[in-house]
Image 1 (cartoon, rainbow over the protein chains, first blue to last red):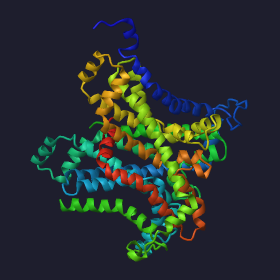
Image 2 (image 1 turned 60 degrees about the vertical axis):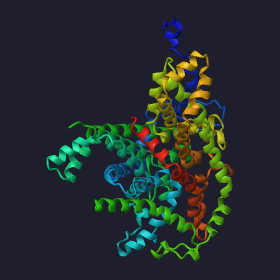
Image 3 (image 1 turned 180 degrees about the horizontal axis):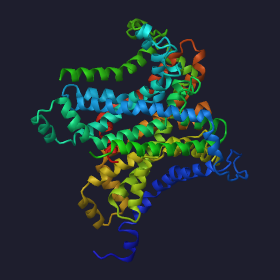
Image 4 (image 1 turned 45 degrees about the horizontal axis):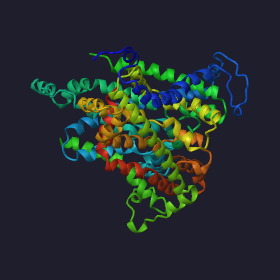
Length: 297
Length: 272
């Protein structure tokens, strides 16, 4: 087929550009522009005004960042999210890899297991938070089973246990999704490798360590990154489970502080600066994780 | 082998028990946090808590709001997402690679971080606070669904499209008459996958709806949880009743169509 100059310039089906236009406009309006706008606000003295009012919003350099970084509540929130990640990410990887490996070889009740692990993932956090509050209440079921072993103050009102409890909750809530990722990855691990391992006399545990773990490494990288991004976005759980990041800020997350400073207290410039710092933090952590998890042996 | 099965069973118990407990708790007139309370006599169960939560937050209205919010997102995703997915799969045009890469990139931008600028734009600049439009806009097209649509369109045989084009059919009619009827399973998958996003979403509708009669159930329930429940006679019962109502549609859809949910999430998960 001969290609005319128009075809060369616009492609064979220029109508395709029309078809994707609504989607591209959507991406630009809802992702690209707000992203740039957030960076802009973080470097200016930006405040809410009546619609249409023309006011000066002077450039203030790093002032907002200085304010943010010298705010103890913000520093606390970033430290809290690190505690969250240190518990949540390894727990997620170990449990989802373990359960998916067991599930991969189990024949009985396979669908039942898969479905039951996935149910929390499709349910609204607001709904399951209700039952966790009931379970982990001072005189809830968990403490009444533990009896004298129950922590005092109880889980969610204990400044040492509030964040770890939230980390466990989120692990439980998201685990089904990660189990599915690992199940898909396990299908790609060659059966020959397991046979070779058992010929060499490797037991089940040895072949898990030497065949399964390296075989699903790309999936592990993905699981670690997704779990990290999910953790950095933490908001609903500290807002509802611990009554707004309590006790005394012990379970506040950066997004929660961003909401309080940016919207409740009406300082969107400060809120944006927290958001930008959070993105940078996540990127740094993701790069470190990639180095450790993604390395080739 | 047996050990593995016991481990899986234990896991299933940990995952399912809170749901059982949610249902039981919502049906008890008095909260009973003892072990015996988890296995109440059927005679002691009542729907009283459902009446209480309905009085406090107007369940019907909240469900309608959740439905409009979710329905709007599904409609937007079906109309604009199918168009985009088809173009990305079957049409050669300038900028296609760029749009595709943009779509993948979007998946890693955490939505929460866009909260403040979106709030400023939608609430302050466009004046869309307390409106369905403002609620729907940031979720209008689900990128994962676009990706799923594209995958399905890619699997159709090329001859089908060539033949229709030789017959002089326009791309829009090829899409509507030939391609869409062949990818109906993809549409169902896209709808299911899109459903759980807005139905379960909390932060965004929470920020932009202050009027109670516009709040989706996730928002009105959480407002009840944080403010009103302390004054109620059996706060947990009412909260759990609301939680059951909120969880039921998503869980039911999932149980009916679990195969589709699971395969869709695998394909979207391993793409990256």
